[in-house]
Length: 409
Image (cartoon, rainbow, N blue to C red):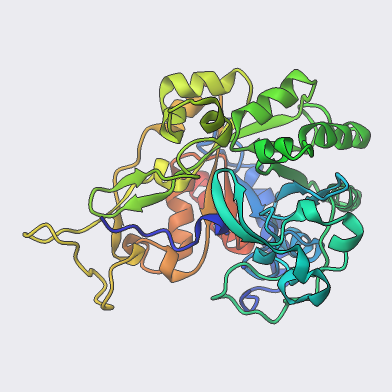
């Protein structure tokens, strides 16, 4: 069995030279807005699909920094997405992982050398490094962000600071005060069971922050997401009325069979694992699973292969073929398979579909796309997805403009 996921399990989504200027990106966004007045998309509500900046413009700048969020907005993103973890003193900060060496310069700081933990369990997985719950906010503020993909340029490492949930809310409000701007935020409760076990639960603080911002309503510019159903259900029970999205993951793709594979910790929500629930994430994409999600959430955030499966080509002996002839077999040798009915099934259940994660690098694109990331976006847009998590929001916006021009014809 050949698997193709090119990120370690903790690194699902980093810096390239900019391909467009901020000015041209804003102009492109204006084209999209104008097209939206005259065309409908195959989304649940007929509106253009959302461009969700995955951790900001993370293809260009270090993740989850105000600079990455600002660039994403300048490139035409509708939504800025980020993850929430907790510091030792209970402040919610935007980092993808509790282990800070993944995305900060903490490992280079001699003053914190003694904080390193070995074989520390996070959602049942042993990790070694520096963990946010061992640092106060004041200490976190001395750290600087780094890119999480070692194959992307590193020149912006160490330049940008770590930000809090409150700082992101303040930033978004300032953006929305500008003429013609309408920016939503998309926070994720990251490892919520883990944080609860540490005595640092995320949910109450997130609700309190949204309450204080006046953003606890369905009409607020907010989507709240989590991989753990229990986190979303708890917030709904405690009065959070903002829109919620259930994330749906998997471990990898078996190119020989074209099937999604499941391995801990990406086999099931961790709250299910703790409760002894043996169902996999796959249970969520069944009609029964979608109906259950509809009782507490407004949408689903599935990994892309749940919508468009990928499979390698086999020769007469049943061996995978190096389709592009580069001497190795990877995602670039996979072909897209007929789309599943997940988008239609979710829409029938009244759920929006925001799928992840779209990236520009050729090594992350199936053979069918011929190295063109816009081709991937367009396939998913034409299938009716309501939003895409994009590392490169400018590329997503350009593809969306193509979709809307098609719809006008």
